[in-house]
Every structure is written in structure tokens, then in C-alpha cells.
Image 1: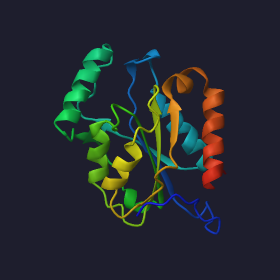
Image 2: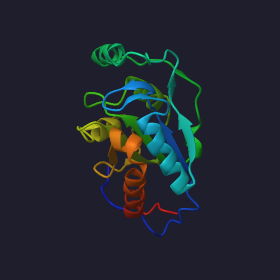
Image 3: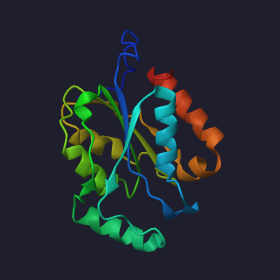
Image 4: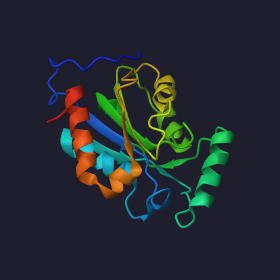
Length: 191
């Protein structure tokens, strides 16, 4: 089920168990150079901090190259074209949570394929799923509808996700934090 409504203020946010799940790429990145902490990771930490959510990073078993951005995107593009589901390290029981924020970089109008690997392992019935992405100009790019289609049974807040430019996440974290805070406030999740 998809909805564009604000979550009910009748539900106390303290009573909702929240989780931030994200994939983020470090190393050589488009428009920001070599980074030690990924753009999406920065935003994920801000959301977890502002909401009191637990946090889980999706880490592919075979990581993407860090020193050559072109090599990284060639591998990612091949995964997308073949609809691959790369294995990921570890897991978390999302069934224990009411609200799951899912974050990723927008790569060609899709999340990285390891995000699908993670999502397809879980039962989303009754969960509220809220998306956030980082990008370098494409915004959500329709990724929210793609994720909503695989989070079967979830209340996915399609059209209500947060898109932050990676360069802003890296180089203007005060602005990024303001965007995160005002977004969470609009959704009724600002502590």
C-alpha cells in the first residue's frame, strides 16, 4: 500500500520502533572526489540521530572498487543490466521495527542492486517505509516507486522521500542537516 499522507500524530513516535537501513559508497565518487564516509551514510546518521532510530548498513560481500570511480560504475551498471542480486554481509531483523528508513545513492534511476538483495529477504507487511537518497542531479528519479513495488505489504510513503545532493552531504552538512530536520518534521518524526 502506498500513501502520501503524513503519519498520524496520534501514534507517539517514542512508541514506534525505528530503523535506518542504508547502502553508501566510499572511495572515489562522482562530484566529490575521494571520500572516507559515503554521502548516504552521512544522511543516514543524521536521520538516526534526529529520530532515535537504530541503524544498519547494507554491505555487499564483494565491495565496489574504491580507487577508480569508472571501474565502480561499470560493475554497478553490469549488475543493473543483469538484474543481479549481489550477496550482502550480515542482516538485521526488520520484523522488529515499525518504521524503516531506507537510503541509497541513485544510480541510473535505481538503487544499487545490493539494496534489492536486502529488501527481498524480508517481510514488509505492516511496516512504514520511508526513503532517502543521495544523488548528483537526478533527485529521486523514480526510485521510490521501484522500492515501493518490492516492499510488498508496506505503507511506503511514495513521493515523500528525501533527496540530498551528495556534494551537499559532503561539503555543506549544515544545509544537509536542515533539509533532514525539516523533512522529518513534515513527516512527524522530528524528536
